[in-house]
Length: 306
Image: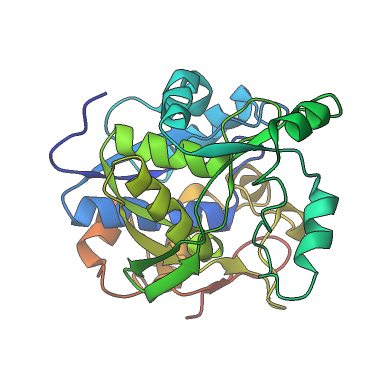
């Protein structure tokens, strides 16, 4: 794959469940950011989680994006077809085997003087004999040695974000590439230089940008949009009622209505106004951060508030 000189933005859903209103809104923002900056817009299916990923769900996700008018360039990338690329990337990193369980890590990070959510380095300096003994008990994950690095990214809307880069997992103990490795490798492979996604992933940006540089790539520009939330501040989920295009259609809310409500939540339309993706493109201001969207409970979306 050869990166295009124009650069690219992307949207990369995991095919474990149908896209809900918050996912669709983020996709719209990612599309608008790419199209208004002259970039290609790419789609990738993040289907590394074999147990949860389903091809039929991925096909519905792609259909939903097309129904909203979000066209894309080039072929859709599937992470499940990229194992060789991840293996090659791992070979260039300084890694070590980790045998810790989640419970062991959780107990360790609760200890005094440990940074919350950071791996405490339990397996970093095991001897070969110790590693051999632990391999007999459970398979090892691979962690990259970050040597306590700190890294700063400048988010398009949040400004400078600095994070401590711990020794994070780059290959799971089932042999599958970990999320942080896969997304960095895949973005670099096709020239993604603009990553627009939900605000819940903001804190992972320093880690991923650091890894991109370790692999010899230039880190993309990041922008993190506000999430769709319920009236009580919870992240929107399927349990909150009709929140997918298919479910909304069953209660009389068609795709055009959904796009209109997304547009209202982005201050790009007035309630009830008929819009298309191209309409939003002509009105969109990339300098204005898309804030959270408060979505009504039950049958469908309500007017978004900033």
